[in-house]
Amino acid sequence: MTNERTAPREIPDGVRRGIFAVGCMAISAATLGFLGATFRFLVPNVLYEPSRRFDIGSPQDFPPGSVTFLPDRRLYVFNSADGFYAISSICTHLGCNVKRGGPGFACPCHGSQFDEDGQVVHGPAPSPLAWYALSLSPHTQLVVDLDRQVGPAFRLRA
Image 1 (cartoon, rainbow, N blue to C red):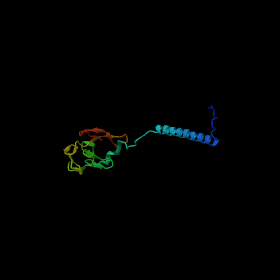
Image 2: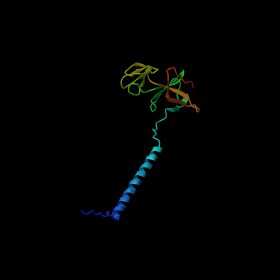
Image 3: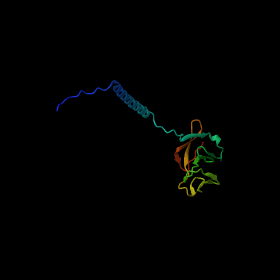
Image 4: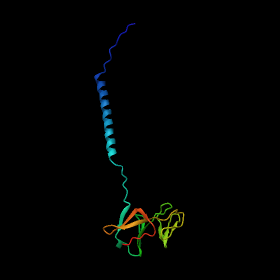
């Protein structure tokens, strides 16, 4: 037996260039992926929702003794002799809009009834309608704050 060492085969220049090109493309793709992920990380994930504090108009827009329904805000605004107050029109059962009926509110979907203060007269609604805080802005506009619930005794005197 003879122990002959064979010379290593040389890789042709075309194959060598191909391997180099594939390596460069892989490094470029990894770099671009890293830069893309870094840029995406720097851009905040923000959920743009409408403000929960908003103007509804001037107190003069609500005549004394009036009840105004704001359908886009799902809100009833009252101007009573005691002052202004706001009650949600969202039924606490399944979220339907309650309607004014007599002295109170009635849900047309499943028959819940509420008194004039939004308290449940009979269900299936599990809880009363929400009352929201009202205030006056520096420009004398009525401002509703949906993040501040108040009790039925609340009145804003404008």
